[in-house]
Length: 410
Ligand SMILES: Nc1ncnc2c1ncn2[C@@H]1O[C@H](COP(=O)(O)OP(=O)(O)O)[C@@H](O)[C@H]1O
Ligand SMILES: [Mg+2]
Image 1 (tube, rainbow, N blue to C red):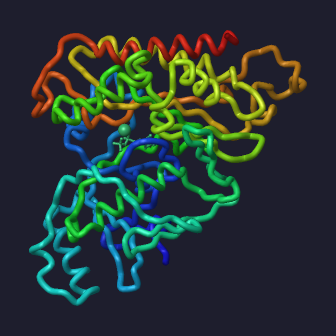
Image 2: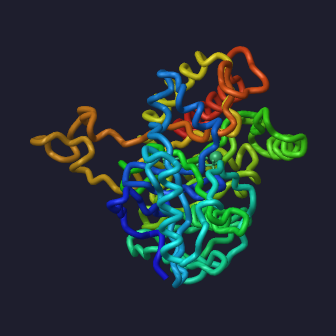
Image 3: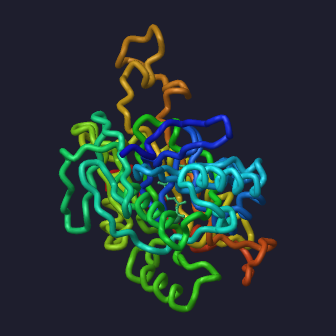
């Protein structure tokens, strides 16, 4: 069975086949690739509203918002499955019509257009589908994933158990789990024939060859104002029992490239929930370690960005970034000495000058996931707050403190 790894096909009717995103380290529903520099994720209108009225100050620290698309799951008679996107520029009725015509033609069924609904999707369920030999089974559908011998991912669970490194595949294991959740939702009997709206966002890791990614859930509180009493209790308990309450930081997932063994070492959010303060600090240390050595040269550039972000967040009165994450990203691919700081003409190893800016370690810090962000002036917000988000600032302060400690070798 062939599927989603498919082409970046943009056929004449303006449809685009989506591919699974290789480097998803956290979250719950599958993130998809629209093109090389654009990812897409199921729309939550609160997130759309946030991006559409984004404060200019935050732009360098967020992903560029690129608009909306409509997506549906397409299967043919041989069980091949794909996610197909329509540009939102076509009006929805046109998209629905095209889809209905297409399905009518394929399956020889009538009247599908009446059943098609445009809905905002919610992905609450957990999937329980098989995975074997790089092939995912979702109900009766299968997905083939590209096998890439250059890259492998190894997930370690809270008990230190690791999956078999020989099982080389080209996707983060957590991302595959999320992909199953997305596909099983989109192909369930309750959502059949529905179009889903997705947001298009800049892929913030597209400039990296081997992106090392840390997803930190920020703040001391995770639930949004719209959470039910039951959900609120669940989230508060998770915060109390984890580093969210003590540090305003919790690991939501990570992947670190290991130079020795040429694979990504991965951790997921379940591991993150078990960490003590000390364990969290060690995890941060491991995030900066490539198997050979601690990459201390990354710390100052990351600190610079975090200090800048902190001063910006301190100016954002009324914003509360509940359940959002901060991504810290750096290049895991080995940069040879000739690329690192030795100017033309100077003998390698003897340069005392700082490296030219283009060869400074490549790091990035970005805020993501604004599905529960609230601020004064947002549509439909039930509560408003004064002053900046102190839980977020507390998290940033602790992160800065821990990084300084690691730098000083404590
Ligand atoms: N703009 C982006 N560019 C690259 N990766 C992203 C981007 N947004 C999200 N991700 C990846 O997807 C994961 C989940 O994203 P998130 O927005 O938190 O999803 P969810 O709403 O399911 O929690 C992140 O941990 C990160 O690995
Ligand atoms: Mg998230």
